[in-house]
Length: 376
Image (cartoon, rainbow, N blue to C red):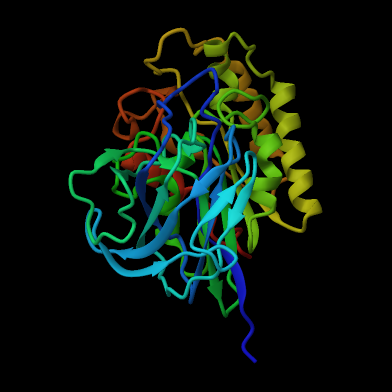
């Protein structure tokens, strides 16, 4: 009998819409269909969908749900109904998650799926992915079965979804990219799939990497999304099929606290946070790989402590380059820093805000990962 197992084929990190600092405006739903574009990191013979009401204040009703291969834009190809314990409808309690029944829809790595959800009643502000680098289509009423959504509002967010699992018959290693915007992809071209994680997947001949980056996320403190230390179990260790974890944190710990009257992380706090993740990954039998903290002195956003935090960045990077607590370290800092001004991003890699990478910078970041250490 052929052995099968479920592994993560797509992931997206979600945040609480009620947070103090908002890098994107949240929204609520009621009698609306939202159709998401989801680029699969890996494929399999069937899929199951993971929905969430993690930060919702009231039960979330799903009136209908369908998943399809994408043709172009909002247009669907092969289409399947999604059910939950045999029912076409479901209710997700506040704070809860829900996994669908298996759907017989073979998918391939690099394929776009369209996930359509009809939300019949008022939701309050929706649990969402706020900077995913991709759009969702929103229309009034139940249009989950429509081949194309005409006159849809296009919104660069995701709502109520955390992932898609795929059914595989061969042993397949899966890595989780766990970190901030340099994984999620802010700064890269919208809807072009040129995030650092996409570029890394293009380098792989075996296995794949799913993306659980959250723009603005901090390793050591709550501010935008749960801290990396807090969400590590749910968003990394418990991802089905995970064998490796890629970690990229630090910039937000050093400078984003100024937006919420929080102190900058110290060298000791950051190192302790990295050690915590390494210990927990290894205790779970997983490999873990850490990125150095990239440059940001050219950041155009006002009020950030850019220069005074550079000594901490340098100290943590020196530790990351010398420690043996990780299975490998990938030196993003040296790859994207301007050699003439090493606290700044190289001009050809700068998205324009001095803090995020463009498509070329994301590719340079991906190139720093040692593939012989990944999935070894």
